[in-house]
Length: 217
Length: 384
Image (cartoon, rainbow over all chains, first blue to last red):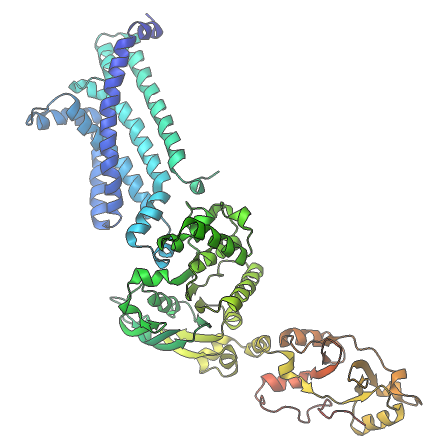
């Protein structure tokens, strides 16, 4: 059976897994953005802490993703959530933290000191400089980090099937164990399409949110 | 008015004060230039005034109020601030950049729009063309203009400008300086202008404060700084060509000999020649009865001539207005054989005369003397 035939015959199953995939990746990204961006901004005010946190986040990235999902099981089984969506979300949050954190931190820090001085010198408070100048100016770079995190999470999210979180990884793993190529291909293609669509969506969002004055065209 | 009283700034851990007990008053409506080599404390001193950096000791008052008694944010909203790097917000349109302080002060949209258009006109940019542009779509000179417009947006009585034209090519800098002086003519703001360019300082300042190693070396009008530098540092800072720089500050009327020696066109040639020989004059200016310049004659022209001077007078086309600056006048004079320049008013009437001796007398050490017996040009009036 060709991959195409497989997809057609198992369409509802595919949609179900895609929905599962979307849900846990979205939850993970929402948490990662909601924590990573503010933390990245905060770190620009605390350089010493910044080094430590970025170092730890860097180390997190070096842990092989399969191992990270596996590590979640003993830790979270203490709370009765050893397998399923919860460990998958936590692992994805930890993974996507670094690109978001690092891009936010770097973007805020790279704002020209002269521009900050101009803001302060014209009577803005430090908070106004942050929210009206530094963050809007950094949005483009922050978005770049978020898009990396989105694409990466969708890809790594496939591994979550290993610990019972479901998602499109299900097709891939089942396909491997059954040496069923069409099934593997269907899972892989679906993950790629999802990643491309998500990246496209965030690209459009970026164009809407980032000022025209910052575009380089 | 800005008053600095023993203002001192010592950065934590620094051995030397960045600003060392500077006292200075900037009268209302004047431009005071802070100048000195880099690291002299001029920018630090300026930033102390709007409390971007805290004072170590001494006091500063702005329009009679001690700045330490004011809220720093409020204070800065009422002091215009422009810097060399301009620091326009790249994500905001020109309109929003200029509107920075008005928005902070809570102006209505209509009032802001009106003010933005007015300011763009003031800095010579077409409002319709520029208000919706972003900083990246501006040239260096245009960005500087917007920077100055932003500093003036809420019409602050006081402005601090740190090398606002520093990053611009010399030709455009000239243009911006002239424009700014024209604006200041109307606005009469109290301005502190930081620069390291002595020519800019002389041009922009009614008053110059020369700083070195955190200390005030000399403060006073530009002419005083050039004429009587307080010490060796001041002398070397203003440059070996300080005499030429002074020419820029002075006008023809400050240097010219009033009522220079001349004859009338109706005078008989023979008599005029006799006087010229007696006074050892190689040539002589010729005027009519209303003292309008007719030209000049030399001894050769008059020798053996029987009529009146009018018949042999030579044209003297190179004249100058008494209002002209001396540097330009000198340049004209040097390009002309006679080595003199006659100053005439609009009707062509002789107002005075310049030659190299009068110039050096003015800018040199014998400043106070005028109209003596140097050279052949004297303030003798009509020769007959």
